[in-house]
Length: 405
Ligand SMILES: *Cc1c(COP(=O)(O)O)cnc(C)c1O
Image 1 (tube, rainbow, N blue to C red):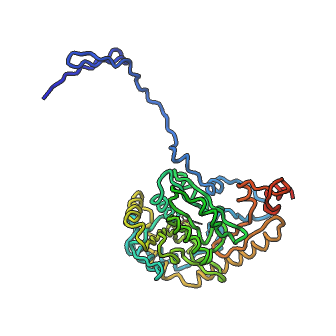
Image 2: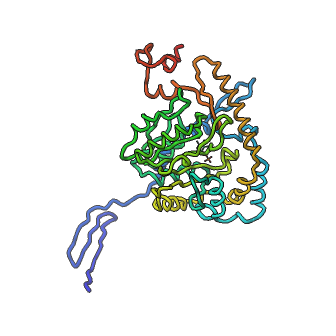
Image 3: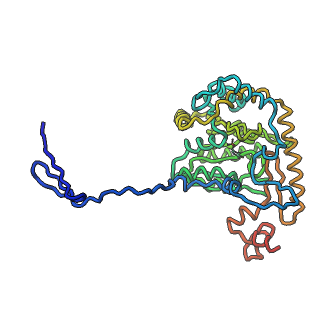
């Protein structure tokens, strides 16, 4: 055992000498730290920007006093009171509340019985699901956040539709994930430009986001288009994050195909929830369905999702307590009536916008949106200009020309 003796000498309040076993070492002047307030918002907060919330939450418009205002900016079906949820849905939550059984903490991925209910509801022979394939979340937004967080590291990239739902970019940039936009084609009812999509894939591509039915396009992909998307994913070995929050919300003339039912090999995280189909976005109940028939995600991704779910307890227990009744007791007429209401509104908007010269609305097939083609979004960004402005695109698609017309 060696015992060294130290003497630390401070002259005044800043000149410091250390003496070890008689040898002196000067540390010179040490600046005394005078604390000062310097509270700054984090880098993460500065990288986080949700354009929809930023616009909607800060929007101050003076409506024409002689006319009621119709807000077309936000996909919240509860705003005008004309799309109420079903009584059974309300009743289910009342019962859950009154039971007193749902006031505590649940497992971070949700109650096993609720995961079982969701699995059974969405399971089908082409894409079988069990309770452990379901992760319950705080709305579909947290489902997307967890799916992105488990699939992508900072510095990797994800492929995102344009025009598309803005949350993907908001979440990705906040996590340091790069976003690459693939084009949707208005002239093909907003199908994906598959060549463009495939050209964007590189060694750092972590996943492909497919939103079907689409916000904001109101489009519904056909089976054959979905198969072509899957072929790209399969060729390039890129997993799919399917945002299917509008699943089953399609008008009578077309059919909704969950993308996972069309593939045996592409691993897919399908995100959904109660918000849109059951018209209760404020209840914050969503889920991830893990479709992985070839065991490509394996335990790696499943365990990753479970770990991430443990950061916060996302899914509300009261709503979990109501989930089985919501899913089993909501009458078929409710879904049917919601859709026929949306369909007649879609037809009305389509007719009204078609009558405006210069606007080219694309008739929606589902969800709650209608998108007007085209110069305003894609062509403006890619700076395509027509012959009138000395470029090459068609005048009807060129924003500079449109504005002059
Ligand atoms: C509304 C919406 C979501 C988010 O759903 P929440 O359950 O409210 O979080 C996700 N994706 C799309 C395309 C949406 O329109």
